[in-house]
Image (cartoon, rainbow over all chains, first blue to last red; front, side, top):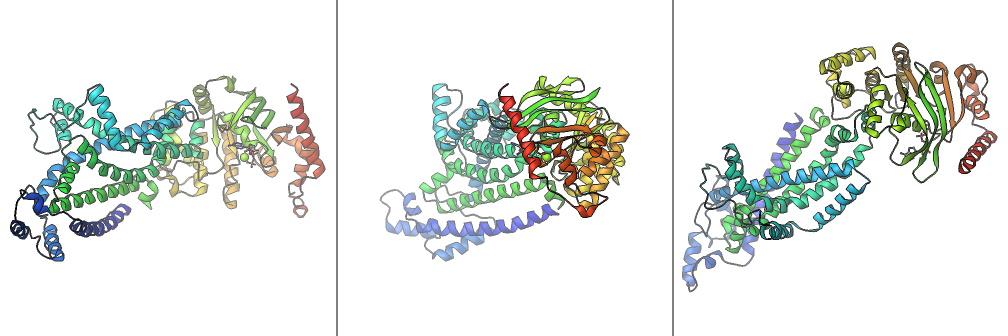
Amino acid sequence: MQILRVLLLRLLTTAITLAGVAVIVFFVIRVVPGNPIAMMLPPGATDEDIARLSALYGLDKPMITQFGIWLSGVVQGDFGTSITTRQPVLALVLGRLPATLELSIMALVMAMILGGAAALAGTRFRGGRTEGAIDVANGMALSVPDFLWGLVLILLFGVLVPIFHISGRVTPSLELPFTTDFYLFESLFRLRFDLWADIVAHMFMPALALAIPLAAIIVQLLKQSLKETMNLDYVTLSRTKGYGETRVILREALRNAALPTLTLVGVQFTFLIGGTVIIERLFSYEGLGNMAIDAVINRDLPLIQGIVILFAVIFTGVNLIVDLLYTVLNPRLRHG
Amino acid sequence: MSFLRVNNLSVRLKKGPPLLRRVSLQVAAGDVHGLVGESGAGKSMIGKAVLGILPPSVEVTGGEIWLDGVDLLSLPLAERRRRIGATAALIPQDPLTALNPSHRIGPQITDRLVDILGWSRADANRRALELLAEVQIPDPDRVMRSYPHELSGGMRQRILIASAFAAEPKLIVADEPTTALDVTVQKQILKLIAGMQARHGTALLFVTHDLGVVSKVCQRLSVLYAGMVVEDTSVADFFAAPRHAYSAALLAATPKYTDPAAGLQPVPDAVIAQVRAEVVAFDRGAAHG
Ligand SMILES: Nc1ncnc2c1ncn2[C@@H]1O[C@H](COP(=O)(O)OP(=O)(O)OP(=O)(O)O)[C@@H](O)[C@H]1O
Ligand SMILES: [Mg+2]
C-alpha cells in the first residue's frame, strides 16, 4: 500500500516537474540569440529565403502560439521535426537514448562496485593504513571532474597502453545483427560475446570516467554510514555470536548502512547522466549527449526541446526508482 | 572448576587512565555471579572483555580471561570470537537497539546455530520455536517471521533471552537486562532469566545496580569501585556482614524491604575518601611495578 501511495504521489509531482521543464526550455532557447534558419541556409541566402523557411517551421508566429502548437503536438506524442535533419525528433531522440542509458548504467554499476568495495575494505581495515590509502585515493577522485578523468584515461589506455577504444560505440566494420539499439544488452542476450567485448572496449573508458567521481562519493557516504552502524548494539551482539568482522560487516551492517547512501546515490546518478553530455563528446560516443551538443550548435530548437524533456523524464524516473527501492528495502516503511 | 576465571585483568583507555584495575573473579558452572557498583565502575567493561567486545578505544594491558579452560586473550581474534560464540552469550541491556531492524526475528535466533555451530536450518528453526515457547511468547510461528519493529520491548527482550540460550551456552553475560524495560515487565523478565538459568544450568554473570535483585538471584558477587574489585564474596556473607566499608555503605544505601521509610542513603564522604585512597595506592603500586 505504501509503495502504491509513493508511486501515485511521485507520478503527480513528476507530471508537474515535466510541465515546468517544458515551459522553461521552450522560452529560454528562443530568448537566446541565434537563428536556426540562418544557420541552416548556405551563406548568401536572402532575408526573403530566411523568412520563407521560418514560416515553414512556424517560427514566424508569436512565441505563445508556437508554444501552444508544440505542446498540443507533445501531448499527442509528436515532438516536431528536427530542423537540421528534417526527421521526427522523437525517433531521433529514442534512437540515441539506448546508447546513453547503457553508458550511464555501466558507469553506475562500475561506481557501485568500485565504491562499495572500497567502502567495505575501508571499514574492515578501519583505522589502519588501508583506510588511509582509500581516503587519499578518494580525495583525488573527488577533486577531479569526470571529463578530466576522461582525458587521463585516454592518455593512459588509449595512447600510452592502447588497450581500449577511444572513440565511437562499436567498431564500424563489424556486422551488427541487432534489432534494438541496446547493443550492450542485446549482444549479451544473443550470446555474441565477440561483439559484446568490442562494445565494452568502447564503453569502458567513458563509463569509468563517469564512474570515478560517483564511486568516490559512494565511498565517502557508505564508509561513514558503515562505521556508525558498526557501533550499534545489534552489530556488537552479532560479534558475540562468533562471526568474524568481515561477516559482521556484510551480514549486519551493510544493508542498514546502504539505505541512507542509496537516496544520495540516486541524486548523484542524475548528475552522472548529466555528465554524459561532455563525456560522449570527448569519446565521440553516439548518444543523446553528443546529439544535444550538435543540436545546440545548430540551434535546432525542436531537437533541443525533445532532448531536454527526455533528460528530465530520465532524471525524475531515476528519482522515482530510488524512492521505490528505499521503500522496498526498509521493512519499517514497507509495513508502516 | 570455574567455567569463567578472570585473572588480574587490567584495561585502560588507549594511552589513558585505567578502567579496570587487576580485576579477578571466578564463576563456577551453573552459578549466578553479580557485578555491582556505581555507574562507571567498570561492570559492563568486564562483561565486554569476557565476550570479546571491548570498544576499540580501550586496550587490555594485562591479565587472563579463562573461558572453559582456554585463555581467550591468547587466541587470535577470529578463533576467540568463534570460541566465545560457541560457549557464551549476551543478554543485552536495551532490547530496542539489540535486534537488527532489517532482519526477521527467526534468523536472528538461529544464525549462530546455523552459521557457527553448523546445524541444519530445519533443526535450528525447531529449536528456535521451542525456545520462543519457553520464554512464553504467544504464536512463535508468527513472531519468527516478524520484524523487530512489530514487537514490544518486553517481547524483544524475551526474544533476546531465547537467542542467548539457543546454543546452550555455559555462560551468559546479562548486562542490566531489565533497566531499559517498563517497570511492569521488569519483574517478569527477571524471573524468566532466573528460571531459564536454573533449568539450563547456565552460569550467569549478572550486571546490576540493584542489590535487592542480587540477593534473590546471585550466589556470589563482586563489588566494584573505579574498576577495582573491593569485595568478592558469597551473597550470604555479603548481606550478613560486608567486609569492606564501601560495600557496607552500598548495602546501607539500598532501601530495605523491612523498612522502606529509611529510604536511600548516599555513600558517606568518608567511605568514598577511603576507597579513593585505595585506588590511588593501587595505581602507585602499579606504577612502581
Ligand atoms: N566506548 C568507550 N570508550 C571509552 N571509555 C569508555 C567506553 N565505554 C565506557 N567507558 C568508560 O569506562 C568506564 C567503565 O564503564 P562501564 O560502562 O563499564 O561502567 P558501568 O559500571 O557499566 O556503568 P553503568 O552502571 O553506568 O552501566 C567508565 O569510566 C566509562 O566512562
Ligand atoms: Mg554498564
